[in-house]
Image (cartoon, rainbow, N blue to C red; front, side):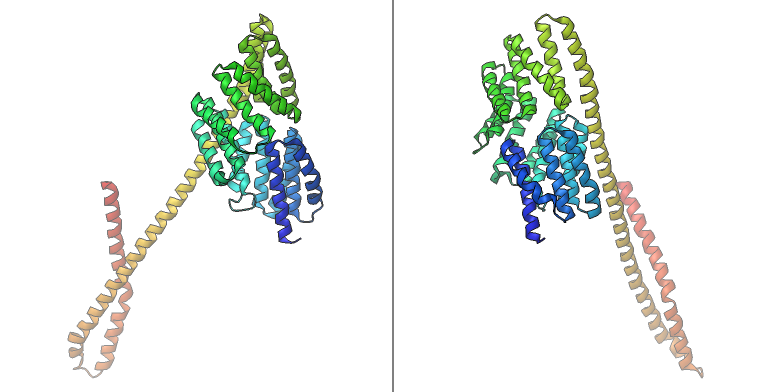
Length: 437
């Protein structure tokens, strides 16, 4: 296959993942029907790896996370044998995205971070780095590490030239809007979410995401009528596009709006639907919120036995999932910090060794200069004083030559003496400086 044809197929995979990010079900399915046959029978192993990646991303889009993982797992052995770091990075990226959607944030952070480190920043899949950093930003919002989240959103925006990329601009403002919402900075949150809606030519599925987030904002601000309108619109679009998991998110928020408005029976109807969906897709973090709302709704309707049961389930699941995952994330991050410290320490040792070698070379150079000066002085002394004395003997030329040879042989011992003295002097200066500092 020509390199240009291979590059074209790589760009088709990039385009396919972009469609997945728009959540346009029809476009995604149509693209898969064309793309998969063109990849599946390729003799090039790296293109076979891209087939597994694309197939895994389709399973991820369909919320079939276990099947997605099985496809991404096929990439790893293949990428190792090919020494293809980009392909290996794509495997980690897909795995991390699936784990994040399934609520396994600790595993998601590990895999997405590896993908961000591995994928070539100047290669054909550079745009995926923006996706990775954005996902890391959203995960850090979920665990209340807001400063880190903002850094990730900013990195995602700049790494793929967000100013000229409408989807990058959307993700940037939407990510910051959600982050500031969690920080209770409602003014900044509303500013960025409105900026998200101002991005031109957004597909309805993307608009539904922004409507959901704005609905959550107005819910927090107790502007329930605005929240209800936005969340109802979001649910309608998501259900029309068969995005059940996403619709569940909006339904959960709308159920809380109903609860705040005193519409308990309507809230419970929505929450029953949500419970079925979180069980279907095994989205544990969403289930934590649904259980909490279930408990509150049953408490408001004076069904205290059910309320207590839901509160207990909520507490157990929240402690086992979120607390443990946050600890694992911090453990992973600490291990990264330790690796960086070790790398810095090794670099410091190498630098120190280089400096010592430079010092030694300088000492050797000085010692050689002093040695040559000494030898020249000895030769001059020999010419001025020893040679006149030797002229009285019969073999004057031979004796004079022997003296010169002996002087020449003194070069190495003299050089060693100077080198030792100069090196000891350099070490003393260094030690004195360290004590002074």
